[in-house]
Structures are given as C-alpha cells and as structure tokens.
Length: 271
Image (cartoon, helix red, strand yellow):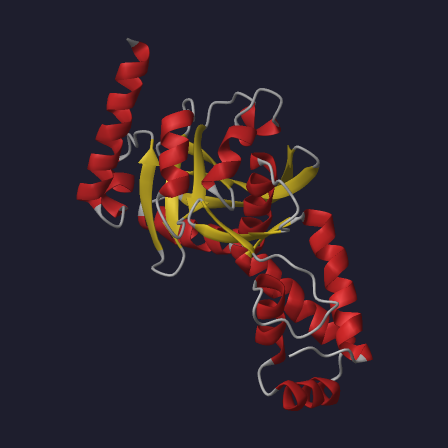
C-alpha cells in the first residue's frame, strides 16, 4: 500500500533527516522519534484521518514502513530494514551503509541515556543506602562525560556513615559508560578519600556486563547494578567492606558469588 499525501510526506521527510544523521538507531530510539514526529506535525484530527485511511495505528505502520521491505506505506519512507542485535538490543541500519562498531556503540549509548533516567537510579540507591545506615548528602551534581563527539550526563552524590565511612556515588545510564568515566582524563577519575561506587541499571541481557567483565577494569571502584522495577541493588564488581551494605543486597548469596568471580579475575590479572 503506497500513499503519497502531503501529511505523510512531511512526516517521512522529518524522519529521513533523522535516520540519515545517525544511520544506526535502536528500536526504542526509532519508535520514540516516530512518536515525537507524529505528535509535532499532525493534529489529533489529522492523525485520526490517516489511521482511518491506512486502517491501522499510524505510528506502528510508519515503523514497519521504515524497518521492513514488505509493508511500505509511502514511496517517501526511509529504509532501515537491515536489523542487527547488539548488546541485547535491536538496531536498524540504512541498508546502503556499512555501519561501524563505533556507530552501533553510539546508538546503544544514545538509547540507554533515554531509556534509564538517572534520577530513577538515584532513588533506588538512596533507599538502599539509608537501610544500610548511611546519610545521603543533599548535594547532587550533574556532570558530563564525552564519548567521541557527544557528551552524556551522569550524576554524582555522596553518602556517609557515623563511623566516617564516606561513599562517592556515580550514576550512569549503562555499564558501557564506565570505561569513559574511569579514564585518566575524566573528572570522575580524580583521587579522593571516598570509596567510589558506580551505579548502573540492569540490561535486557547480560551481554553488556559480560563484555565489560572480559575487556574492562573498574580499578578500585565498586560497581552496583540497580533494578529500578524491583527497587533492588546487587553488586557486579568490587568488595563492600561494610557488612550492612552486603546484607542489604537483594540476593546476598548471588552477591557473594559475583564478588568471588570478580576477585578471581583480579587474581588472574595480577599473575
């Protein structure tokens, strides 16, 4: 079914600019772009007219028009039918574009920055630390880390306990940001008396964590994984000397197993 009306042309023209700019987009980023485009260019009445004409949900039909060969609804539709699974997420690429690994990586990071609000990680971690007897200091600073040509936000907070234990907590929207945070030229790499804790969200699959474990090192920092839906925290790397923290992990037995695996890796690297 091919439609050539002016409204669809305006929508696809806008989306063509977006897809040409990035060339590789995650499923979520593409769906969000379509939603924003339809909302900004079409009134409710115009959208209803299009859906009656096309006999279906407009956003779904635009998505399929872009990502498949068989369900095109306009000759002006961009074509991103090349489908790739990367780090557990689905990505679509321009078929004429020989995508590079960096572009897939950039598309993944763009999507995680949208998918996981940093404030959600902050709220889960606050509750976790308060249960372990920590006081969350009021200041919350938004910082930036540059990955190639784009800068992404992350949060910094501090927590302390009566015994003068002090934590510096960095909230990142993906484990994939950690190598950039701990690089020598990053403000997060500065030395201090605080124990550094990096909090990242869960992923759809373990793939990003496996990649990080095999290829990267967090130095002296601990890495915790926050499950926002379950409001739970578990460790990924590093050893928590505070028993109150260890006892408050969502699954202490798995937590000890994760730390044991990490310590074995550290021992192997020291050999």
